Length: 311
Image 1 (cartoon, one colour):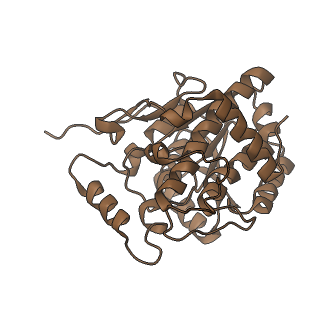
Image 2 (image 1 turned 60 degrees about the vertical axis):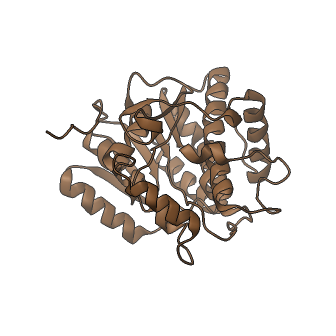
């Protein structure tokens, strides 16, 4: 008899507004479907409207009454982030849940964003930092909102070289990706400290999906063909019991975003072997993410780089 796959119960989210970046595919699509099925109104923040429309159709095929809105959004452009947030501000709706999910993984060659940042650090992290700052008034207006930032088990590969956060001196696809995901975890921790100190009413948490099959493993790494690192990653993902599918991979982030048991400032991941698969449980941050002073310093540097400040 097959072992039942892990799952969690999601509370009724009727009347809540959720924003999910990268909602048209992968983890973002899975999270959008679960939130919509629980009654939340979901804003799909996507770069490609046509793919967003396909995602909406797919979610509504399962949940016919799903309340979904598409908004064009590009994390690699601070102007796009500002325009997206301005549009939501004009709507005047409080944001109950923000899922900082979208990202790109390990392009073989160093690339830069519209604003000149290394693509992974700028898109995966700085874009979400700026988005959260821009949406802060709407998050505070909710009274008890949640911000969940997606990290990765590969955050342990990130290194805080304060003189080279943009990997300009030395670019390693894995290390740059790890740094972007380490930064997401550090941001989540510092956001909780500042929410507590300022009375913002935000529960901030981080989550990682373990070894979950998504298009993330192919979109970035295989630009220009497979590399030794991508072939190794593919081999691990094919091992029995060492990986899982999207409905299970979303569970740590879904727990952090919706469960009454989610803890402020916590980090969640799969609770199985090596944190690769399983139901949601507490995850141990890597050593580099256990220094509050570094969290605060990264926050200050991020404000300087983006020109976006929190109160």
